[in-house]
Length: 282
Image (cartoon, rainbow, N blue to C red; front, side, top):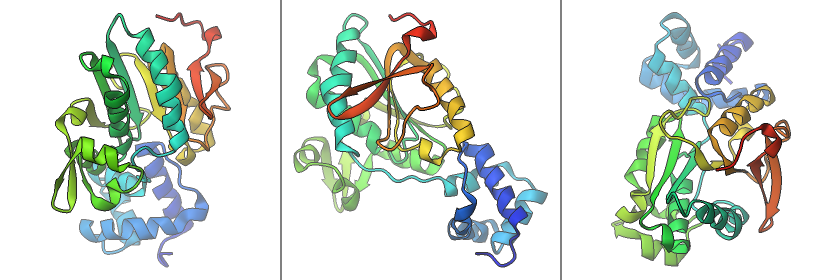
């Protein structure tokens, strides 16, 4: 770790990340600050991590605070990550939502903490291949992330060979991508279903309306326990009364039993807004 940094410095960096992204970096992971922020310190002209902390404290540049949070945010993802979750979407969740929205012909899905877009695009491909009846519906998969860099990457829909080799079957690659050298570009029909924006989980997605499905997978692991209740309240507020919330396999809404009811299907748990919460279905 940085020899010039004190416990107070690390605590300050933790507070910066928490304020900007609602993510909490455990004290046991102080070494991550050095590995991830030293390159940022060089770019900012601070020299080292100690200098970066001094710059943050004294000059308080807003863009640099945001850059620190982005550098410390985990952006690990892949296409069709967690097979059981996508089996549950294909077999249980999406058929139910499509049937319920047949009259309004509108579907809204939120990929929260979308990283470089593989989750959102996976859902779009699932809809195109498995639910042809929604082809002329008003369908949108909205992906948000606090990192502007990964959001721009997602919008481009262009992935390297290593990225498409992770979780993507050859048949899907051929059907939905075009090869350009060593990269693969998503077809326009897939990209047209998705839109991406910069925003944290605690920021209201104004104008989006109620979401029918919220994918909050492998994100809560990086939130302090005290913050998770607020995240669930925000998701509940933005979820349609008959919508569905999906978490990562290692996550659960243990502190939000008054807001959500757990269901099980296709070997996977997912959540519905609790009926006793006082909200009526559509």
